[in-house]
Length: 392
Image (cartoon, rainbow, N blue to C red; front, side, top):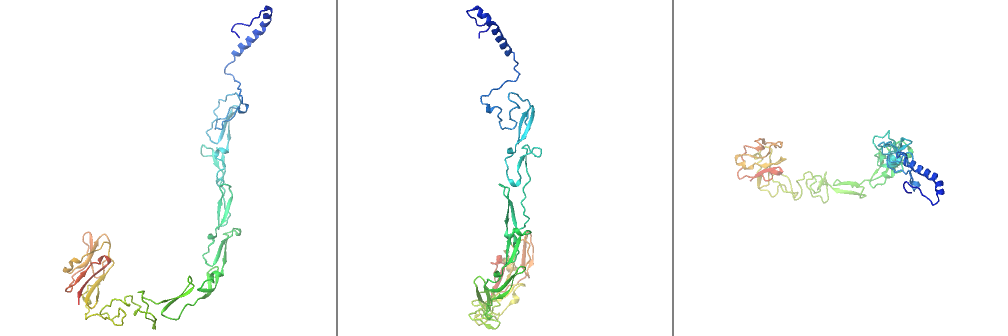
């Protein structure tokens, strides 16, 4: 179409007949150009199935009718609601799927319920599933995948402390579900005892113990359940490793200890002179000792006297304090002793004087007159022993 012109023909009569139609078409075109731009427009979508399709995003749904703009902001800020404008009003549809699905069936189904929710997700949990069969000896559990309860018997929960009872958990009994069945075979299957019965309240009773006695006083007799045999051990009352020669007047075969009440007396022991004891069990007290007259009064109070036929000895034993040190270098002044850091509390041995001095404490044996040619030994003070000796 040319602006301001109409098509003409070679026939003037024909042109006059077309004039009314041309003028009408022109008026329609002018009317169309005057339609306001604010009116609703007609939307044409070549794919009719997509018209009005929702995005799936909260508050992102299409308006209430195709081609009509909704001026309302319908986003309620709740994650689990689908927000849309419908007929000019906001609609908020709950979507349980936005709460993550069923989740752990034991703690309740997750649903969208904004009024009850405590956060912007809008999701809440249902009431947790409680699995309790009321039986004390079962372990009650809930399967988080299915929400089904499991009740497993725990036989250990039925232990009654009686060795000869069979303790089992039977949930069908109700209550604590425990059963305790006496088993006499437990009281009668050992080597050392036979004929016993099981008392569910007391354990094994009755029965006959195996007699392992050989009637000899020289042996200790017992029944060994593990070895399933009687075991007899030669008597060693003082524990020095040598068995007794005699026990209550009975001679013992292969016994070598002439005094089984003293651990220092046995074959090979050092003979202590002038004690009138056969220390080495060779049948001769004080053998090998020269004439060495005892002089016990020379020892300080609390010290022990001895002699071996060659030398006299005074010795003292004590529990040493932490960090003990010797003090023997003052022996020429008649003083023997030891010292330690004063911060450590300590009580001196019998006969010694406690004498604190600045940061140290002392235990002193004073005013001593040591025999001539005395040799002082403080090398073992750390182990709690001091001594001095002199020749006979």
